[in-house]
Length: 68
Image (cartoon, rainbow, N blue to C red; front, top):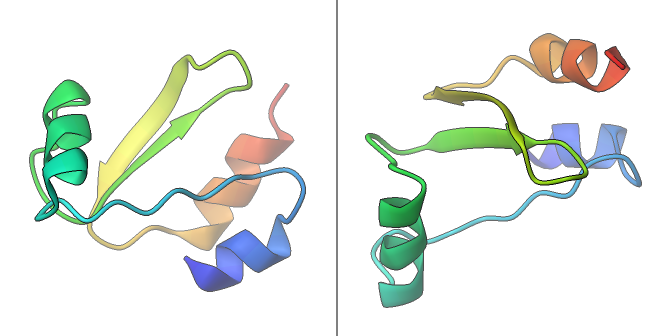
């Protein structure tokens, strides 16, 4: 994630949550995390674009950011 965050700096905000922490657990329940790590990508309006869990493909992230 660090590499993806650096590559797309200014276009992507990465928020990391500790699901063992009470706040992280609450947010995880709100967004229905089923496994960790879970990656959820939102557009600028907060609409969920896609989600995945486990390893994330940097090329998939780049393609998502390139789409209108």
